[in-house]
Image (cartoon, rainbow, N blue to C red):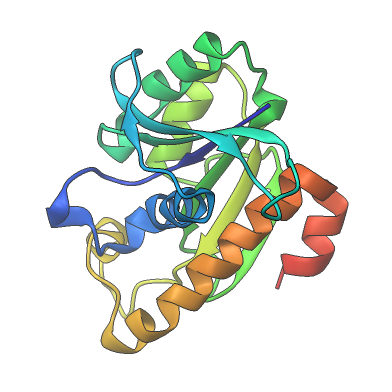
Length: 192
C-alpha cells in the first residue's frame, strides 16, 4: 500500500496557486480512479482509497490525501495518516511544487532536504526523516526580485494555465509509474 500526498493550501482562494501543484495531481489521480475525496477519521485530511493503474487490471493499493491545513502544517496530518494505515516513510509519495525546477519539468527522487519548502520541512519534522519519495513539479523561479512566498502564492500565468492540464496529467502518470514500476524506471521516463 502507498500513501500519496498532494501538498497545497485548502480553500478556493488558493486553488489556482503554484503552491497547490500537489493538490492538482492527487485530484487528477482521484478522477482516474472515479472517486471523490472524503474527510478521513483522523481529522485534518481528505482521502480517496483505491487502486492505481490500468482500468480492469488491479494495480497497487493507494491512499490519496490532501491535508486540510496550510502547507507549513502538513506534517501532522500526514503523520496521522501514516500511523493509521501502518505505513513507513518509504511507502509515502509526496507531490509538491518546486521553484528550483523550470515550469513544466518534473523530478522524481527519494529523500533529500527541504530546500526551504515549508511543507517538506513540516513533513520531515513530523516523520523524523526525509526518506520518502518526492514528485517535484517545477513552477520556476520568481521573476526579478519578487519574494518566493509571494510568487508561489499567486495564480499561474495565462500561458502557464494553458499548459497546466498537460503537466498535471504527466505528474499523475509519474506517480502511477513510481508505485507500479519503481524509482529507476520513473526517473528514466519523467525526470526532465
